[in-house]
Length: 492
Image (cartoon, rainbow, N blue to C red; front, side, top):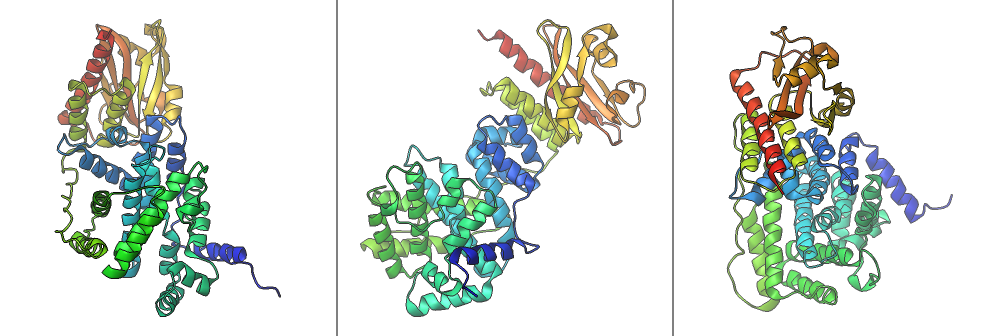
């Protein structure tokens, strides 16, 4: 029987790992988020709707947005956070959070490897900022998974990983070379196969390869991205995986190797390493884990001193941003929307509408929330934007003639009357049966005495009566949209 080829051994290993019940295969939901980010025409509404289904990602996005916005107003709206951070950050957090949450409470050795991956990701992102053709958040994701082959080997194949470490130490081999001796393939081989299995973009898969920048074709569309990943990964290994003297020699060598691609000044190296610690601390803080930044700062200082014989104090520490303050979600989201409308934030009308819908969806607990526009000749009102499961179906269903014979929805809108019905109020139940809902709210948006649209929210499950405080927030959200529409009409 012939021996298995290298590719067959890799395929068998991937099959074994992915067949384990606890393997972090990306759910269809996370894959949908990554696919949506990759799609140039993804709407803010679609992306926000996907994010709202993932509590961990929602919380992390809010913390990230508040860290960037500091010391500005508190951000509690996912819509606002996505608008501030951009879709590339969503991509990085969606993928990175899924991997890290799986291993962060595992044995110390695995956690340390994941911390190194976070350091590499931040180094790569800082390097990417120096290339105008590289997206920093995409580079971050590539840096984060650059070492995923080793992380998964340490977690799922601890005996083999121990043999790899022993072989590398005894024969003074690189870890990848030692891995080849034990498993007959490298960490990079496994990482490339796993990222391909996860359905990550080709650029992420390609960045797994262990290539010095000299071997990267200058004509490659991803040349600068691959160079940034290679250097960022090498910097992490030199500074945090070696003794100071050896690490200094490795750091100097990798900076020289990459110099034709990215010539760095000494102060730039210092700043990239400092930002690496800051970014890693922030990522860990979002999962409730505290990084021992002082130890990393001391390691960094000792390597840099050994590299050039200079003395210096520790790198600057990072202030950990606070999490979103406790309080009533509906009130806090309403306050944020009103502040943005009053400050002339520059957000377009659709974004502000989406923020209002998000406040009602998250803060008031409705199952589906939509906004409907009156058409130009004022003959019909039609649903256009929505949040919640099957919101698109409600949008299709919400189409009414703007006439007194158009039914109870049209009658309420023409009368400019807000209608709220819950399990304990049946005097306004005519609208409920149209949508099969137990409770709902209908709020006309009236500008210059004309209805321009409406908010409709509904839930199929009965709920307690709405409190006066909740109804007040509904009014404020509707009034915020009235202000936004009024301002839009007054602009030249």
